[in-house]
Image 1: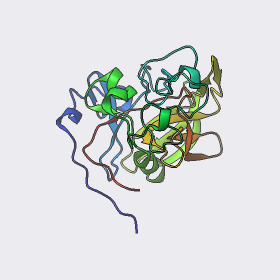
Image 2: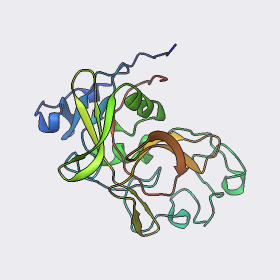
Image 3: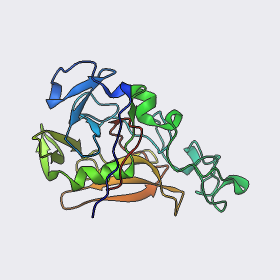
Length: 233
């Protein structure tokens, strides 16, 4: 049996207007969202952070960072104390073997100050949890497709609304990899087994799944309206 937890939306998730752009259900802080009729009530942004259209790749962020940069690796990662190995973390660490001088704080979900969606789009927006990503692909139908010349996955809900995620690739060092063939999207959830990783949603032509990856890589962010709780899916 699948267990769901009721979700109560903060006041910030009410629409500023309903301009219908891109099939949107409403907007918040000038950014559109769509209601897919999901049991959790999650409202998904219709474009990536840093993009103006559904097909736009947008910006790339290391997990826990809120600005873009030219080089993505451990030596440039904000919470790795400048080291070249993932064992000197100064935030979001539940294992002293990976913390700087044994540091731990047991934080497992991004705080608003470190959330790229909140920092760039304002209060009311945040990065989805790993549970919200699972709900999206479990409770919609989705296909690999091309939209306005851009490859990606189109998620269609039972209420007829849909959401397009472009296959925007990722960034490592100063190289942009896999654009047009793979999509990598951060969640706000740390991998508590290996805290040098965070959970993200990946997809390509043939498959889709949630999987932990290095926090220092530059990946896409698709925002959701923030909620006070989220379900397990």
